[in-house]
Image (cartoon, rainbow, N blue to C red; front, side, top):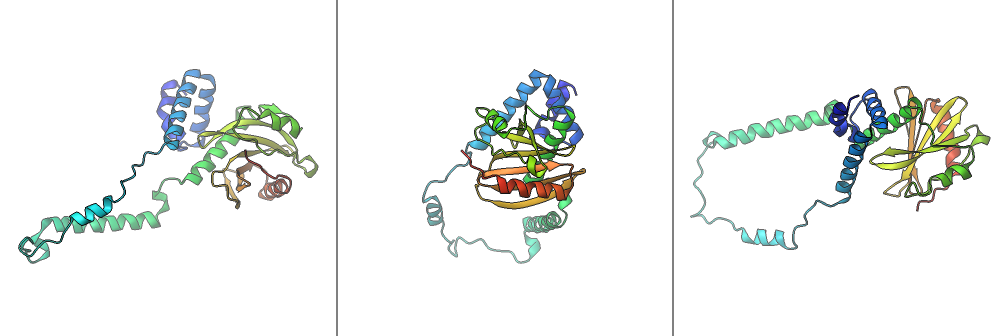
Length: 263
């Protein structure tokens, strides 16, 4: 992919709207083109700043009351003489037609999900899947390769603004093999890498804003199984090509071993 094409697809990449092959092409180019990578970082920083800042304008207290008090009902002498009949006012005909059109559009929106764009959860799922596939195809599965949780966990110190929970599950058939930094939802996250026989599991971890716990949700896309849940102030996403049963067993064991603590 050329620099020109990369710049063209940056907005779609930031919004998670590119398909898998285009995303992989773009990220491969970003790894070798420092200028495009800097441009992407600049736009990501701008987006993050806009998301942190409040663009809302709070109306002054009492504004509603002042507006309402300034309004008064017209006296009979001021009231306009109304012509009889719907067609006496052409603007009403246009308003009626617009109301019918709006009603049809709302109905179609509700009953034809295909007309709507992807939800935030769908975009995040696509990001997670893309990151998993990229880590396998681009030979960037691990920044730190180790089966020792006491080596992997300290490696993240100073690289993230949180300390991810790390456990080795080798005794349960899911050995820890390493970890790396990744990028999801416009922020850096921890990616812990586990193994099930010859298959890899990416476990993405980052702080969860609401802090509330949520149940596990399992879904399948393009031959991969993904499950997500939140607990103890962290968001977890696990993705792999192992069976759904094996992935559910991995999550069950992991939850029994990890007691997450966010900073």
